[in-house]
Image (cartoon, rainbow, N blue to C red; front, side):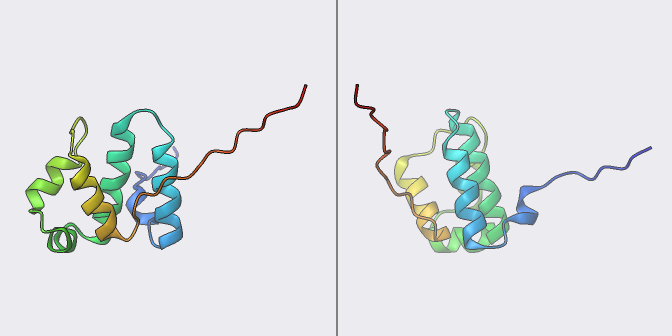
Length: 100
């Protein structure tokens, strides 16, 4: 019998690069709950109590905002990402146009 341990992304979010890559990958999914779950994982990895202090939001408010199905305000997401040191940025997508 093979023993398998439960995977927890929080255990691997130990660098700025890993966090940025994780959130970027989550943003590629059309389901907004995927991004909220990823943001929640990053918040847990960094510490919810510290994040609450840095954002001025209550711990319960953070948990509620980052729960599946939540519809947090854009302002809340911006506060959280900024406090985590991973602000959201827009970038142009380069579309390859072939000359015919």
